Length: 171
Image 1 (tube, helix red, strand yellow):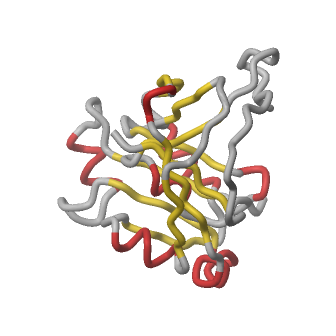
Image 2 (tube, one colour):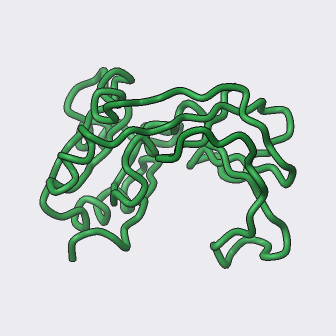
């Protein structure tokens, strides 16, 4: 298993645990967050870019596969707003890889892993074109004027989904 952290900041040498902003998590324990390779496409965007992402899960029905994917070979989709297209071409991302030994699974569907100890990345990779990186990973990328309708449809499906940075989405 490979674990990563995506950032727009280069040269991060040490990841210190931080208190989670999410109120459903223990506010007394700092964490370093990582994402597994399967769900990495959900984060290959500029940080504040709102997005609807989904992929096939073990409970995904054949009906939802046909409804939400353009072809049988596609199993992961990222939907973005049109206004983020230029940033998807111009933003440079830094992908930090961690040794997975000190991480525990926090959310299986989202692919989130956490560690309460300081983490030193084992590698840093530069992604100069996030849109191309998604395409290279076989992800279907869609652009739309608004995300909310897609978000509602995906939430009501049998897909594994993630809604990221929706507070920045067009109303």
